[in-house]
Length: 145
Image (cartoon, rainbow, N blue to C red; front, side, top):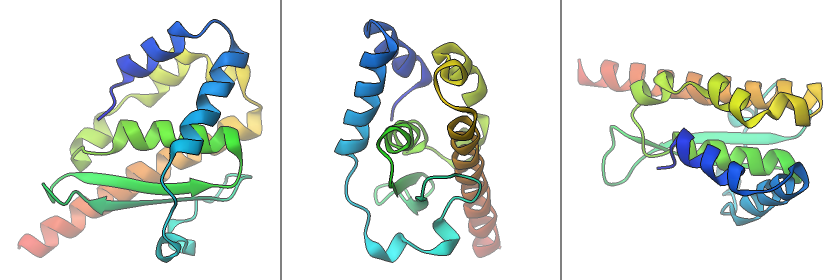
């Protein structure tokens, strides 16, 4: 599980935005390949110019926690997606809902360095991941009752 503070520290270690873009691209390249079974319209992020798929799956060691899998067809957004997967995986739906990613993005100055369309797309990914976590929690409560 990656913490927002770790992300900030990793970015501060890099000298400039060119190095940070390279770091994001490396993160995206390290993202495991997405199984075609998860490339469904239900898992596709709407409102993002890139093609992005994201899907929560129960953590095999603790089904109350979620892990995310995903993919994107553009390098920079795939890197941001990898970062978000690292931040939101191995957490409960309540922990995911409580993450303050607006503050993280402000500290990273993402809005200053990404186009408005990309910035909007990143928020669409975050909103979908949080909605999926909330849906997962609702489904778990329904199954328990």
